[in-house]
Length: 228
Image (cartoon, rainbow, N blue to C red; front, side):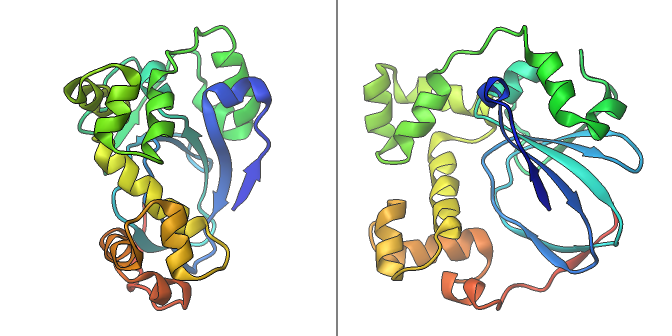
């Protein structure tokens, strides 16, 4: 898997762009609170992948290649022009998307996205601000900081991300653990915002299927075949 350089202007919309090619070995798709645009390069088709609430372990047939565009919080809703409520752990095939040529998107995603999004008005930053606050505080405190009700915060998140704010924050924490290089588990738990190490271990097992130490050591759930 290789990551493409995302120009500064595009970073308002896109968190990352990757080109992935299956090599026939086991791979893991970790939990993700982002919505992803996925384009197959061998038979161009566009699929909108909703947030992934559990890790997926799989083996894909060698040679399959795709472009993955990971959208920033709330941006996919603006791009698609629809609520993302109900899209978690799901996929939405699209025959077309205004201003986006699927064949060109597969061949040159950066240029196509720059052209398509250059003149679009940037959505409100309230969702991203809420997502940033949730990393270090509670849903109640986040709503208070934004001067909105918890009910309104919940509606904002489910429409814009497909997840409740609490679920969004839980996935963010486990991704922080996955991104940690080295260190004591207790320190990693504190940095990620868990109450303690046992809380982190239970949450990690929920999302990844195994405790963090087992995952790091390579003792992971069996991978299943992926033929799509």
